[in-house]
Image (cartoon, rainbow, N blue to C red; front, side, top):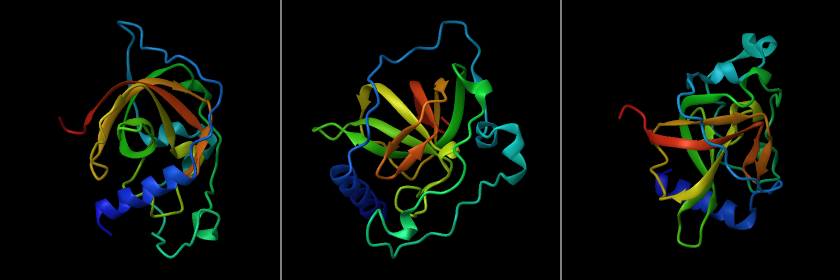
Amino acid sequence: MTWLLWLSACSSVLAINPPSHDTPRAARVIPQGQRILSMNWEQLLPPQEREHFSLVPPPAIHDYLAETAPAAAQSGSAAVNPALEGVAVQLIGFIVPIELTPSGSVSGFFLVPYVGACVHVPPPAPNQMIYIHIEKPLPLLPLYEAYTVSGLMHAQPRGSGLGAAAYTMDLQQIERYGN
C-alpha cells in the first residue's frame, strides 16, 4: 500500500471518528534549563512489564472491514511508568495524525514505535502510544519517516478511533530523526 493510500485511510478514519476530547488545558512548556531525558519505548512500561517488551510490530492485517472488526481491536497493557509524570523527555517514533485543521494542518497526533501503526492494525498497546498535544498546528509531515519528539510527559490517557494512548505529551520540539 502506498503512503498516499495510507494517508487516505487515516484521513477517512479521522473524518468518521473524531478523537475524544478530555477537558481542554493549556500546554505546559519545559522550564528553561530542565534536563531532557532521552528515552526509549521500553521505558514507557512499568518495570514489572519490561520482560515482555518487543519493538517487533504485530503482523499487518489488511482485510478488516471497519474499526469495530476484530482486526482493529487494540490489546495490550495501559499500565504506565509513574516516574515519567511531568518529566521532560525526548523519544524517536512515527507520526499518526488524528486531528486535522480545515486547512489540512496537524493539530494532534499519536507518536508510535513503528511505521504503519495507523492502518496496519492492530495498533500498539496503549502504553506504547503517546498522544501529542500541539499548541500551534503543524504542516502535514511525511508519515513514513521517524521523528525525534520532545516535551513534557503525562500519564493521561487519550483516545480516538485509531486507538488509545496511555500517555499525553505537550509538544516542545519535533524534527526528523537524524537531523
